[in-house]
Image 1 (cartoon, rainbow, N blue to C red):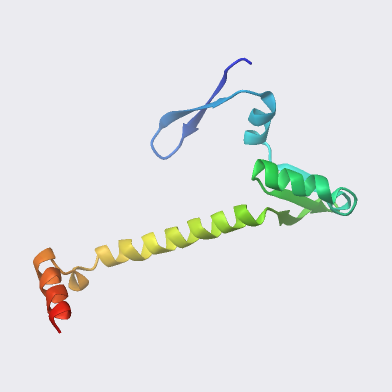
Image 2 (cartoon, helix red, strand yellow):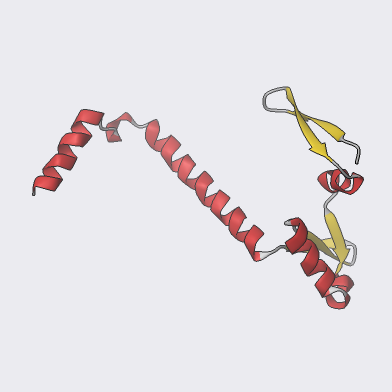
Length: 119
């Protein structure tokens, strides 16, 4: 197998990231989402299910040529939910870090904990 490299520019840092893939299909999937008509959902459900589980990517379902549904495996859905929860917690922590009123220094926190233990 030949080693194929793709360079994608990262807009945030203006640096270039390198992604290595070993098959053209992987490169194609990086660029294009998997889109299927709604008739495939009825006629080829097992194939769509296999794509979702094997590749770990969502499948976009179209109805009359327009996007209608997104189908993904439960594992991928749980991964997205966990990532969303992490981002929410990071957002709360960032807001709290900007508020000096709620902060407690290390020695104060240790004295509070010792006081709780001694009660």
